[in-house]
Image (cartoon, rainbow, N blue to C red; front, side):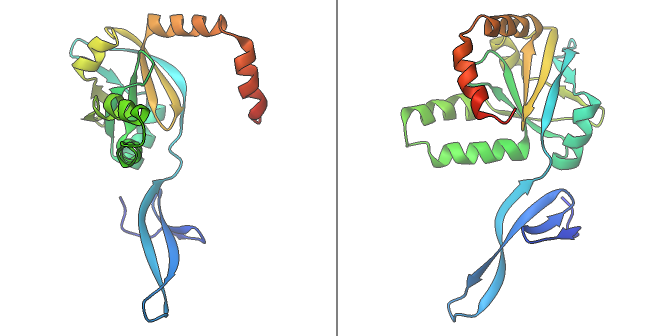
Length: 194
């Protein structure tokens, strides 16, 4: 995190790729003063595409270079691994993105049983892992065993996180989607600008 301001605009101040929102408030004596909120947002943290990876004998994978550079730049390679909700794969989050999701789930933990279940799965299985400069990172053994990830895997960028699938499980999942009701997907596709 750079302490040097690299850009200013109406939205806030930029420190490298980080944006800190700026707001105006009235103080108790009614004079205007500027203040900076504590919300920090990562800019340009989107991942897409898929890569076939091999888990080595020690349970490690090598994050592809196209993802690695962005991860080192924007979160110093600090990753969080956890169980994906309702899918047989591992979610891999940049630590700031996981923190955002965790905080939202904790804030709403008493809202419904569904929030509690999401908290148990997403937060309860989370484990922090640091990615080396070479992109090598240890995949937690408990998550590998739970998802039957042994050797051949597929790493998929799905927006602000990744999913790590056993290669056969991924192919089975894709084949299963082909057999699903097209009408359900058609409703979703009609709402998207694609």
